Length: 133
View: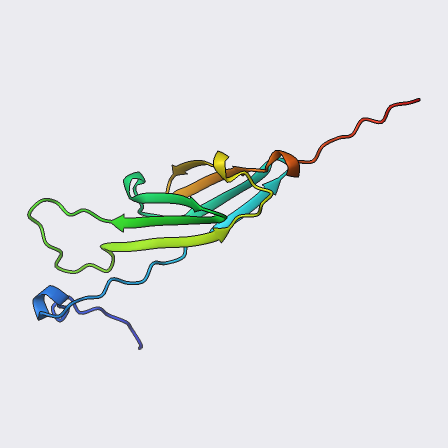
């Protein structure tokens, strides 16, 4: 029988062994991007990221999403064993010139960040009226 068991007694933290732990590299959140005539909606899964540790930044034509996961412990408590205490999410996108980066709207619910990025006026479909002479 092949089983995988984590030994709690044998586990030691970097602080206990005197070694320095490296922070893990940020993970790229999974995203869905939906397009309609008015713009795009981007949904990014960023579980565990509170609003105060979330950053949405536009620099030129680059949109960057960053989030820091921080699981707070009760005052005076130290973790005996923890597989997830901190972590980071980060992902960047190049925005099309057809999008209006100055009008981005962002909201977060249940660990999902949702951005609404409207199309610029010149990129929106328009109807041309045909007149009879």
